[in-house]
Image (cartoon, rainbow, N blue to C red; front, side, top):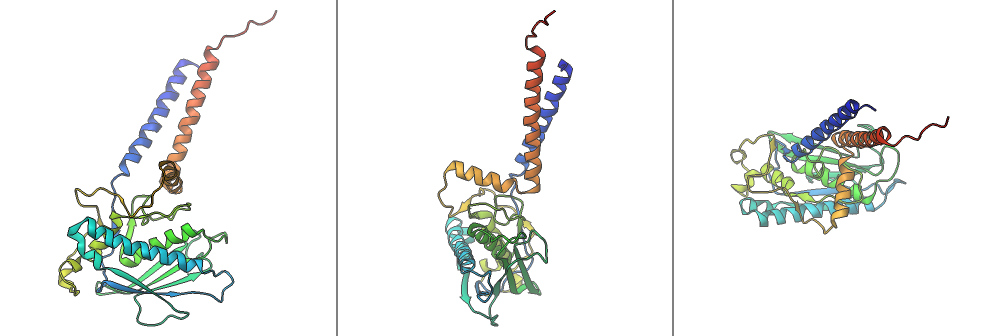
Length: 296
């Protein structure tokens, strides 16, 4: 290969690398969407409606959801203790009850289906809130037991999906960060994502009336933007994150990231860079390697 062609390939690969680095850097600006509506009380009663008569049912579906709810309750307490300006979030509480039928008087109803392919092949969790005059009246959460291929979801995936859908029930929309539980795609990973202080801050903004009074009043629910960033001085971090060695944490983060459209594009770009680099080295080697004299 001619030296000019080698130089062109080098420049092209450096351009790919620059774009990749720039896009990754841009993703460090974290934000989360929040609902315009809020609950008018701070203790939410959640009813589980199991499907014990179905062949696909197993009790692990409820266990994963209970663990997710406990994580949210713990996150409220931790966030309130770390950031006194939002201490009122410690008054939020999710209480659960189980019943074979949908009983009136609850705030959130959680049920399960074998699959949720009626909505989208990728859907494994769905939340439908019902609002009136800026107040959330009730909310239905439907969780899948299996994915679109009919494969039972792993416990970790069930728990992450429950965490995500409960976040919606609390009034959160989506985050822009792929390692956040409120990212718009659930990742199939072996670990459970912790709740972040961005998630808890978003809930605090949804329940901002609680900072003025223990009783809801529309006048205390001042308008807010549809998405929020963490206040200055608060760095993005996980709340009550379990200990995890750096290698496992890096692998988990990578697996989640490459399942996003942006991550897949960047992975392909990185592969192109590697292939281009190998091609360049191979071309240089072939161009400069000693040539054996031909036998006459």
